[in-house]
Image (cartoon, rainbow, N blue to C red; front, top):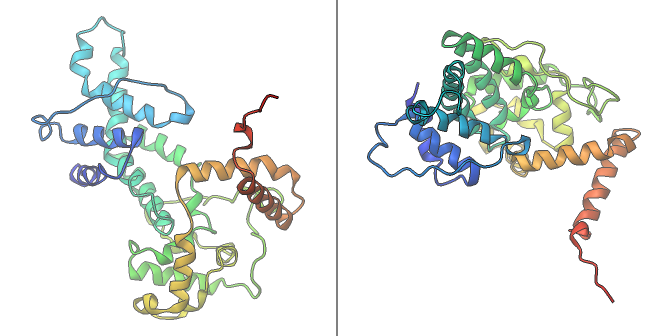
Length: 306
């Protein structure tokens, strides 16, 4: 179980920076301390800890475990209490063995549904190792099932990680639920029709991507201008289909970087109350985006004194 996250962490060392790089480096040290014992390892001084720097919690937990021997030589309660040591160790084990693997693999929109479903399955399986951690992780992850909603699951059709059999089942399920007319707005959302998507009610170890498909899955084809003609063809011939390739080009323009998502959420929350319907809402967002491109850094302009 250790080799897979360890090798993945090693492969990510040249691709990360700042806190993300430090987290990857610590995963390498934590998962294979004997192998890196002869190498020089530099530990950074602790910095700020707040919601905007969420990675810090993982970093400092791993460091506490790595320096457990030195911490024990300090006066009792200086950094951790006796009851906290085992809990921090459990958290570090989970973060490096389970969470780190899928966190390092979350840079592709088309892979996201498959990655998230596999992560959820891993969280359920972790119950064998530590039931309390498993239940806590599952409870937390249920609030972040964005890529497992009906609208986002179809992205897995373009993922090379998903087997041909699973993609065929996904396509068949979509064709069985194909609406007569293209969906202009989602049907299964909270609020006025353009609010938060509804997450899956239940996910088990036997749940597949095809099980998560619903009527709103076709809304993704509409809003991202994806051509569904390839769905009736054999999976092995999809890569030679013009419809498949043109849709893939559209999806490659979809960013899954955390900063982009946070900016999008902030933009949506700022102007959601001003919208009267989905069409009006989209128009507002486009106008705001265009204005910000034409007038960048308005708040940073310096006042020229006369």
